[in-house]
Image (tube, rainbow, N blue to C red; front, side, top):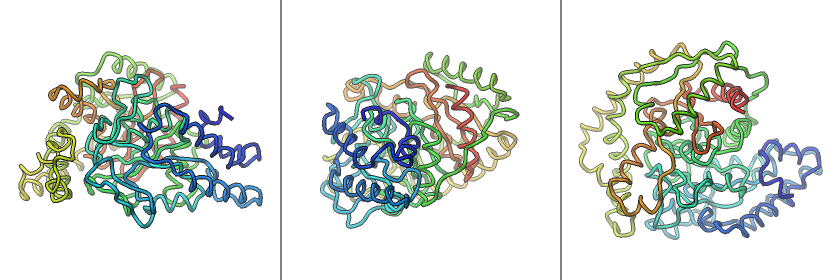
Length: 442
């Protein structure tokens, strides 16, 4: 049964379908692994034993009667602590929301449950989701799978580590500037950033509503496709026959390859070689407006975040980690006209991006330019924290600013992810590309 903890969600679902895996036994195996794990309380905020077992029993009955709701019916997953869950605290990693207990599940949680998902519990995250590092001295900081002293990536830190440590078959997270893709990359997982507006944010604690998205962190591209479907109440896209033959990719140079850690530069170069060997054409690309777009990040993200949270924050600022507090408060320095003007510029830059990238099947770059930074130093060195957070988010933020869907895949080199940027609302095409890339990198 221990081998179940490292299998893909799709293979677990196939095992249930074949009668080889009992959903109750599978769920108990996960719950036991969580309860016995030394990092349990650094990864999970709460483990929902009773709910998980009740949902597993229902899945078992459906399987016995040939009435399974989806391939993933009966497979246990975790949820980031910003998805409302009925009668269970949802605090978004912050003492500002201590003992906040919703009376109903978020819409995506209801959708997944209706497709047979088993909820194992809620996972730790960066405070109010406003950091790409996963460091949270207020609640808990999960460990990176490769280094207990390193940051796990955020803000979906627990979502990633729950999967990486074999404590969930998938983690559902959110991505505003990279919060699915950074922890996925640093923990050698697949992470899908969906297009803004595709998946409902009803019952999801917000950070920046114009950029917030929901997405899965998984062990395979197939799993990501299946969980995208589950979150929407469908069965996911068909990845059969996906190939790189004849596919044309851009190797993005503007901004994305500046100051890369040597290990990341090497892993990325090798990955491109593997894609070429599988039949892909890869062409260097510069998109000059990207630098101007990136410069708008401060006004766009911090203005909205502080606008949404100002009253709550200023009622009890001492409850916050000072670095996160400072980042929120920086939004107060921009005016309404600043914000409106920045959005007008960004809309033009998005059109420029679309023109520059229209001829490609995907845009490639390293997911993160840096490796996971040291947690102790992040807490003691302000400049190191600021630099690490900005660098961690730099490449992923391209996808959010340009309004794209995006996928990160492991390259085989620890904590070195490969990012594929797709066109808005083209997740199905992106996932087919991702499936072919995954095979090429294997």
